[in-house]
Length: 129
Length: 140
Image (cartoon, rainbow over all chains, first blue to last red; front, side, top):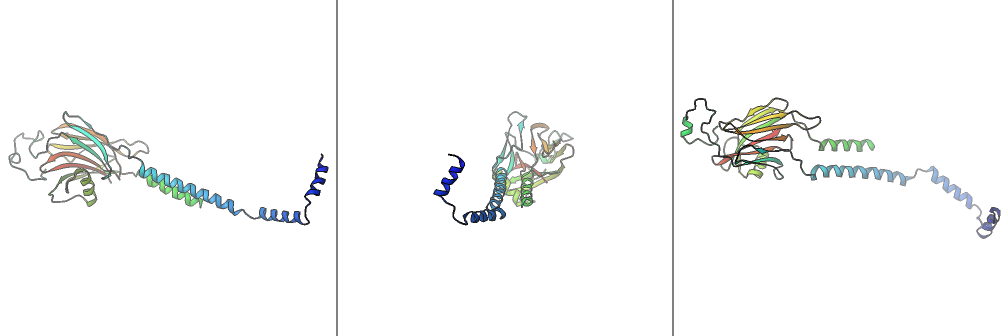
């Protein structure tokens, strides 16, 4: 069957109604000249969605990521242990020294005279340096 | 529309990046449960209380250290003091300091601290009378 025979067969079985071709052409022209609102909405939605997703990722990284180690500590004295950690409730880095003797107001090697001054023999008031 | 989105992303990126500080406030507090005298700010008191548990934190001494300067002996007591040494900053990296804690003239501990405005450093010192001495390093 060649093209001509096929065309004749189609016209016999499914004849084109009068004006059908003109109406189809008009509708096609209307669609082609009008901007497609659906495509524009889709582009805008994609851009907005992408920006929102990026913002969410940034906030998640900022607030949910574990805090990097901002502090280190190591001990140099026997019996003293230094530990560094992050305190989540305080939002602070902490260096904890275990094994230190209590501080005093008494004289130390830094005193020029080497003599015990009066403060060493009397109980000192809290906060005196 | 696109400009607004770009601006939004730029603001978010700026907000998430570390802020630069050029000075470090180094303070010595005495934490105790029956304190008087100049106290730490309410915010600092709450932060310290979360770690050390005392009800009041008396400010004993405070000094400002230039992060671009040289090493400093700070908050010196007769038996216990701290040395802070600003470290050379890397390109784009936050400021960093080295600290050393001395007791009776001997180095007992040292370390480094990456200065962050949102995250101060608390160093638990020795007990003192009925409380404890605490070093605080805070960017400002």
